[in-house]
Amino acid sequence: MNLLKISLANLKEKKLNSFLSAMLLTLGIGMISLLLLLNKQLDEQFRRNIRGIDMVVGAKGSPLQLILSSIYQIDAPTGNVPLAEVNSLKRNPFVKTVIPLSMGDSYHGFRIVGTTPKYVEHFQAKIAEGALFSQPMDVTLGSKVAKNSGLKIGDTFASSHGLDSDGEAHNDKKYKVVGLFEPTGSVVDQLVLTNLESVWEIHEHAEEKEADAPADDIKESDPAHELDMAETHHEEEKQVTSALIQFRNPMGLITIPRQINENTSMQAALPSIEINRLFSLLGVGIDTLRALALVIIIIAGVSVFISLYNSLKERKYEMALMLSMGATRTKLFLMLLLEGLILAVTGYLSGVILSRVGLLLFSRAAEQDFHYSIREFNLLPEEIYLFIGALILGLLAAALPSLGIYSLNISRTLAEE
Amino acid sequence: MITSKNLQFSYSPQKQFRFPDIKCDDKEALLILGQSGRGKTTFLHLLALLLTPDSGNIHIGGKDLSGSSSSERTNIRAKSLGIIYQRAHFVSALSVLDNILLSSYLAGNKQDKEKAAYLAEQLGFADHLHKKTTQLSQGEQQRVSIARALMNNPNVILADEPTSSLDDNNCQKVIELLKKQAFSIGASLVVVTHDQRLKDEFPNQVFL
Image 1 (cartoon, rainbow over the protein chains, first blue to last red):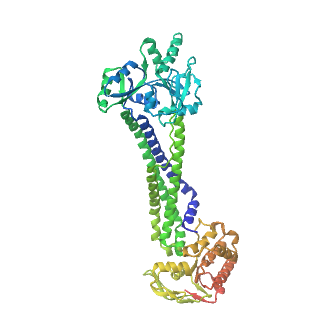
Image 2: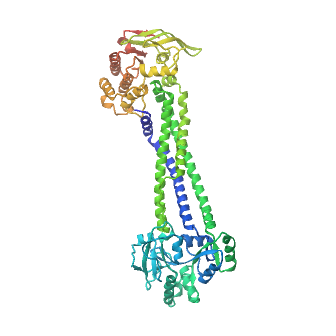
Image 3: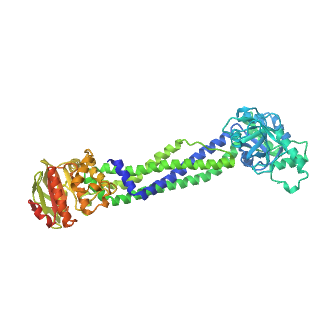
């Protein structure tokens, strides 16, 4: 027999009340904790991939779309631009590197990206097995692609047209796997990398066949088809989807984007600005959810308060009885505080567990749709503050009704019943 | 042993009580009889140190308690007094056994489960130790509260109308058990009641 045992017994006696209080707290804490986790990990994922890329150029359209498609490989590309125009940027003294990208095909939902070895260097991807692509139609697989597709070095596969896994297959030209990357935690993990020539070669072939095919087969909005179409008309002019640019010094940021937007057929987008814009758009939603979670937590506090207040009214005689048996008022006050604390700790723990389950589900969905995985289940520093907050809430909600114990008239309460 | 002298108490100037002096030695029983409204419960609460008298003094176990501090009184209540109320009341969330052990816990004594089981055996509710108190009949509940009052081997046992809610049969049983157990631990037994059925059970009587 001790205070903890009595507190627990009291909570068990009022199962539904305790459950309601703990569940509200669980929901509130779970939501806030999930938001913290998602915010932190999305932010990390986004910043990690942006690192070192100062500007992206591509076809005119939405700058955010250009950034999402070229850096994160999650949106459709905006279209194609002439390689010559991209290469002319290299002559600008402010520009350090230009990494051209050519997209349009995929394998089992993983994008095939034609690029140069500089792309690999930029993401510091290391070869785990085999070699980097060097010949046309050679590919090196990101770690996640290798794991999910089961492809090994020496295997060949046909890519499918478009960015969905159910696109039409390019059966006549097959890619050959020459190497696998180590996991990098960046976008490279979910890509099939090859050189620019491969992408051109595939589509030159495709276009010969398509000359006979009915025209309605061609989806105008499909960037890969635009690549075909463009090449039909300007055979001599090679095209790419976009290019990632690094500047030699920050002065480039001031002059070059404007030059490009005004004087070329391309647009320039700055990742840091676009990502901040994206996050501020998301931020409204996150703030709303956070406010909602806070409201739920406050309701949880009120629920603890009401259930203790009610049970205290019912247990007034019990309290007087224990006082007459030699309990001190402080001891009983502590016992009641303990009930609030137990609810707070239970709510907090199950809330944190709930947020991890939520994260796991979210991560599964995100992995299926975008091949991004979010897998960090460690306790965040903010969650420690959340714990302290929950404890204070439990203590306050329990203390307010329990103060009545100090003014309880033992003799009158015992005599009344 | 418990004695009181010149006890006076008032809830308001219109409602004043003056109580007769009592004296109850160890292993003795005293019956305080009185009709409703004569201050029976007030008297018992004074003796139980739950109320402070306006004047007069109380000795428990030979110790003068006039002018004692509230923590001293709480301590004496826990260790030297066992109180049985008109209707048995318990901490409803706890089992019968835990309710009995609670008195040891609150008095800071060892929680002796064997002793609780022994008392339950003696008082005839050994089968009910792990039930909730609300599952017991009134007579059984009153016996549990006797066991609870005995747990700390108090010097004085005070009973407030212990039999008024019991039928004749249970009344007889409970009062016999109460007397027997009180004497077996050498305590003084003071019963406050209006229950005329107890008249013949107690040679020492005081009328309010």
